[in-house]
Image (cartoon, rainbow, N blue to C red; front, side):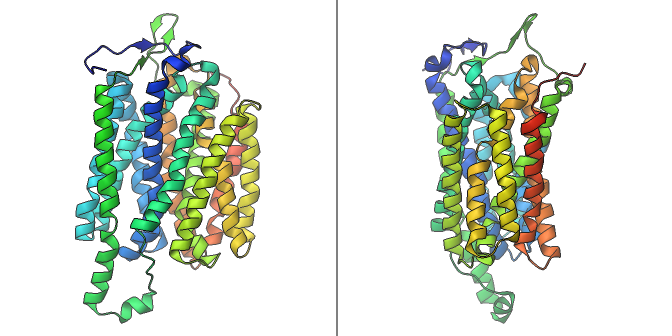
Length: 431
């Protein structure tokens, strides 16, 4: 299609629009996969850059902080951009910003500069914020409103697919399998130690060059494809919405809280997964990465299974059930021994799978004019991924590098999500 054609406007109220907008939906689904790749490569980067840049646990979690702090700082600008330029332009800008951050990995590795890596990750986070602010509500409203939660879960299933693919790519092209203790590093000559650090850092360059190139190519495709623009229509005409006014919806406020703790829990689980598999399960680095891929597989299966189950069970009940099981599995991760700890973490992936899209869909349900600002609030809540892992890393360092005790933080998060699934989701507008 010619990109200069005026975009078709849909209201988000057409139950028969599913087949008509299949191609736009497929294109948006690709974005879910791409930002899934970015987030799940972070789970590889944390233990990898911990080695390459000689970091402690708390310092290594600044990788998460850089990405997810961007969500908090960029959510309002992203919402303003979405309101002014619409979904298509926002998604293209998000892709190009994302690509810029990916390409910055090259100078970061060449200089062996952890600060430059963090800047690159922050820029990636800014791009992801713009993408998610636009793509989540776009996927939810692009078709029959009654199937919004199922549609969002289906799109998010491909985000889950990335959770399986990224660890394989990371284990093949980023992780070296080499690991030295502090005493072994101290015994090396300065030249050998510097060579080891540079070699470890250099392995990230090619994967991120490829990722950045793919992002630019997809941005070009989006530019030339005519995507329908979504406009929410109210009784008085086109909806305006209000950023702070959106919080009058009690269930949106609870969704923002639940999303904060969900993202924090997910990032905590994956960020320390490899270290947990090494310390708790006794696996080497590459084997631990393969188990992280199994976690991703279970996460993906959970997304598709959850999408199917939503045809038979209400979304809030499924969310509460999965949160309850995640609490139980977290207890096994904290108090269990050996490989069972790793198996419990892998199973958590399955039960976390539907949480983000389900919380998102429940949060914007029935808020009409406030859908776009409500989406911005839910994206801002992703800052939980910046704060809670840092707290987990601090807790681990304070307890003599005991990874297991750190998983008490995801445990608390799942309890809060359980409350949202039981009561917090209920719609009750505050005047």
